[in-house]
Length: 235
Image (tube, rainbow, N blue to C red; front, side, top):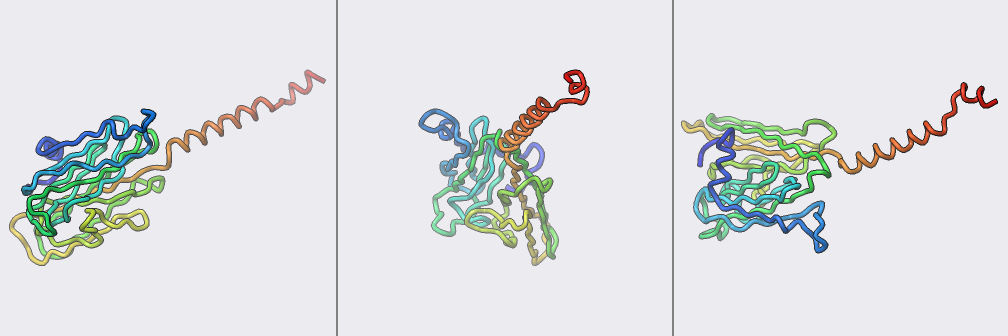
């Protein structure tokens, strides 16, 4: 499926394949929600471009997604993530014993009130020869990059640097996701890849606790403060 994941097309992908919903999987034995839970999808279909979408329950956000069955740019086209879902797509090759098998993904879901989560994407095209580079960073130093993921429907694309073919993720160094790809020849048909970085802020819960503590200190200080006028009236 050689179309870019922009605009309406990105959301149309969700209706084209299997979906798995684990609404009960992020609950513990006392029926209280867990702060963090990992969900493994069922298997997509075995044909090229077959997809599997795994949803986090309401109140959770995706903070990581990993390919657990299939090899990126061979038997898998990689993964796409948004706030509550992770989508994996089958490639057109059967290397590594993937004949008759689909892809699977593992998504990590985190309660949405713990941290602010931001998703940053960049699409790189390769319709010309030469080297193309991509760099993703988080919005500010208040954020930490948790994961950097690849999606491209071009199974014969030249392999970009820093990519783990078994997980579909790029290495992250110093808060950045960096990659480059060398296109050996110009092509008539445009080829592309989409990178998605998942960034999380410092803990909201810890920030809230800090500000509550600070407010208590300020309140205690204001109660213990005695103005000069009060001293004169009481003397």
